Amino acid sequence: MPDPAWYGADAAWFVPFERDAFRLFGRRLRVEYAWEVLRHANPCAVTLSCGSWIGVGFGSPRVEAVPRRRYQLDGVDVVGRVERVPVVIEFRRQRYFPGGGIRDGRDFPVVYAGEMQNSPHRYEDGALCLYYPDDPPEQRWTADKSLAELIVLVQDHLFLEDTYAETGEWIAPQADHGFTEEAKRAA
Image (cartoon, rainbow, N blue to C red; front, side, top):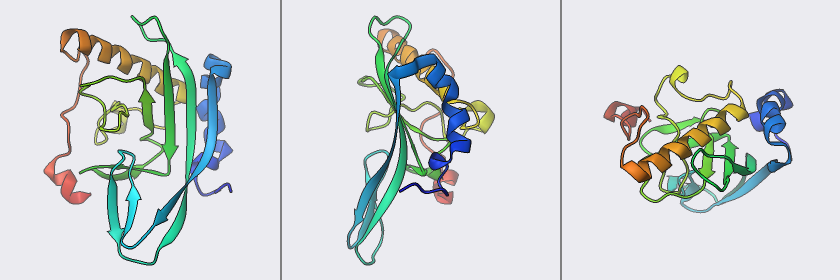
């Protein structure tokens, strides 16, 4: 059921994007192209990346297939850890940020890696908060970079979380959390 209009089904996007990651991680990295079936009832509601639901109005019950491209890495090495940490990176057509609106899913993948309680840089569902969505593209990861670069960012993030757990300090630059009132109104 490939959707050629969706970037995740376009070999011109994903082959160069994932090439270096497969060279680095080999068989430890797997990719899955899947469709999630959403059933919308009256009133219609959709599930968000954070696990919340939002109503999208009233209408006839309908079924919608939403494409996803998911990378599963058996484990990444993190400085200071003995065990590798499993990573899941999921690209969706769009990503919703509460108070920040809907963004192009290419630049805002959902990333899960290990577990950490009380991390200042995780969403409620445990996904990593790798960068502030309103930062300019030169200050955050974007899809014109590679999957390998994203995985390195995840490794760095996990090291920073470990340091935070030991010291109570986030030792890297960080943006304020939440969206400005102006961004919330525009969303």
